[in-house]
Image (cartoon, rainbow, N blue to C red; front, side, top):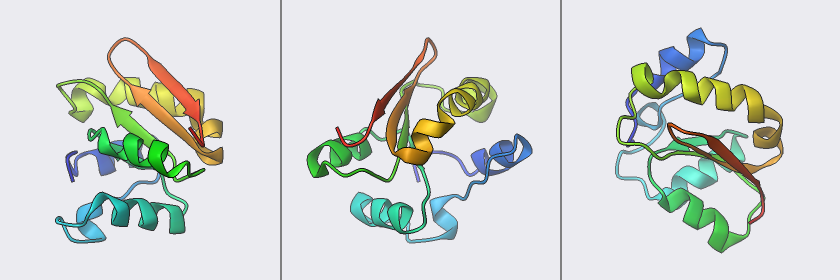
Length: 114
């Protein structure tokens, strides 16, 4: 919920399936509910909220994969090309279970569990 629904068409246009949580569940849903839905539906969580990475670390779970963006401007116009490059570079890791951090300078992937 902390990233714009504008990401959905942006990602679709570049060949990545995506859905915004606002079309699935309540905007007040706890992070654990979002993580469980993603795990059950083999989806990757894309977020600006660092809590999801913390949940992964505390749970020692092998999934779902999480992409955390660590920049102030999280618009598709600004961050989109960096995210798409990271998705292409680390897609295999995300399919297996990973935490991917993306910022303006680099992307870093950690294989789950952490």
